[in-house]
Image (tube, rainbow, N blue to C red; front, side):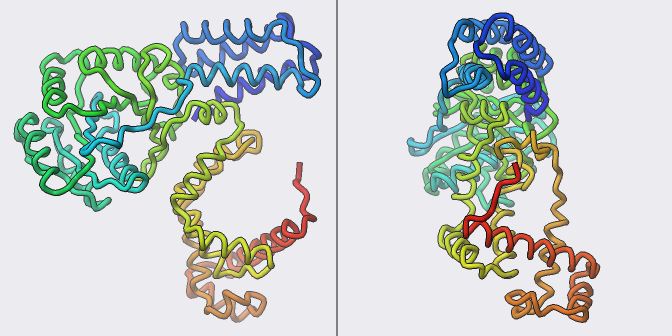
Amino acid sequence: MFEYMGDRISNAIKNIKGMGRITEDNISDAIKEIRIALLEADVNYEVVKEFTKNVKEKALGQDVAKSLKPEEVFIKLVKDELISLLGENYIPLETSKNPTIIMLVGLQGSGKTTTCGKIANLVRKKHAKKPLLVACDIYRPAAIDQLVEVGKSLNIPVFNRGKEDPRLIVQKALEYAKENGNDYIIVDTAGRLHIDEELMNELSDLSNILNPQEILLVIDAMMGQDAINVINGFNDKLKLTGAILTKMDGNTKGGVALSVRHLTNIPIKFIGDSEKMDGLSEFYPERMAERILDMGDILSIAEKATEAIDESDAKNLANKMQKGKFDLEDFLTTMNQIKKLGPLENILKMLPGARNMGLSNININPKDMAHIEAIVLSMTPYERKHPEVLKASHKQRIAKGSGRSVEEVNRLLKQFDQMKDMMKKMSNGSFKMPF
């Protein structure tokens, strides 16, 4: 997400490299490039106009501090303005009530049903809640079945009353939640146009019955500028507490993210960054601004790692790496822990300088990791701990057992040796970064 826009902005900033002072002349081209980048990313014209005006006014006449370069001053100004557009502060999801009730609303096809499951999964893992999914989309064919399948995949209960009136469904769902100790209720409503008065009245009735702490509008990030009209239309009727941008992992321009808060005052609370049930990330304006500028998002990586990786296992592996005792058994453990973080390409995109290093467009086939796992598992426990004993006959047996080629076995062993060598150099301080 934001790759094209971010590259254009980064190139604009490079244009003032080497200047001793920021002046109107030497930033005019940079401002123009940023304006074009934002417009092409589908950011609202009025937002672009105000953004570039603010950056220019703040930049002009600033003396460059001795410890800074002009581009560093300029990039800080751009980053600060991006954060301002995106909403300044992280606004967490309400989880303090018992029960906490959330309604998901939006257009048909925006991804509401899947997002219901993602939110339920997140609050259970992060906040130790006992969620209940409520099926109120009685109009779209198979919508109820889809939510039931989502619930089954997560082992989260779904309150389902078929095609009954949604007003009665939510009343009974509240009773069910109280009887079964569900402290978080997520209601999946039918997709509708904000100009459909009858269906919007239904949403209003559901809101009055439920008195929800959160009413979140699910928006397809590829909608473009029409998303603003949709948000305002729903907000006029329901008083939204936040928005969720879905499909941010696709080839989306992402301009809606830079326009939503500024034009509607509705905070973005989540972005959908993969199709998997853990593919929902809380929205931090500063982190998003840093991603746009290719500064990376190490905090988000650390949070994902904390949630997915056992701390004692991580410490044990780190000790083995430092002592040079890292073997293929440990390598397999490490690979399985990395898989818990989600798609590896999404992690690579969050590294500082990812776009500059060509990591933002990498697609990693999950089958490749499965092939590596099959090769390692085809070894005996002793061979995994002592790969140096592997001869030609051993490799042929391993290749046959894993369904891979001897060449792939040799490639894995070579890569493993290179990795061990790098770990050894890092532990004794002799490793030098290649840039």
